[in-house]
Length: 172
Image (cartoon, rainbow, N blue to C red):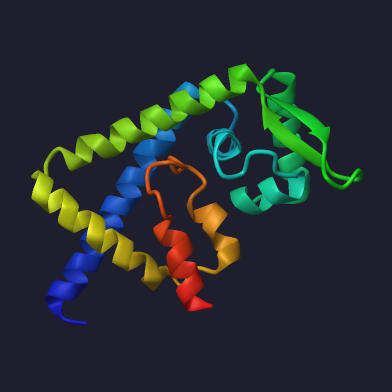
């Protein structure tokens, strides 16, 4: 790796960490349900709507018991409800109207953090960055099972065709 490549990688890592920290901070200010609560709400408002406990566990990277405790807290707080799943032995998790409102406030706070960083770039540089980021997902070597976890805080409608999902299909 050249000096420039090392510097670029280092800058990317520092920016990724700073953005993750800021997104976690604003999400925690909006929703007080632990570190995984905001991601659970946003995921259940988007691509993981109706997921089972196990499906949500995989999205969040938690243990089964940890996910059950999180779901219990969120249900007690009136943010989600359990319904009978496709398999009568499993439950399907659905946000209540209050849960949807909170998920959308979390997503808006996340978007504000990201938009603030993007304001430093001209429209043409943002277009170039968009293309570069899409290409860089191939370097993550994600599997189809990883997609929901990588995109757990994503705005489900923002990308159209998900570049993470596209990259996962290419690595299989």
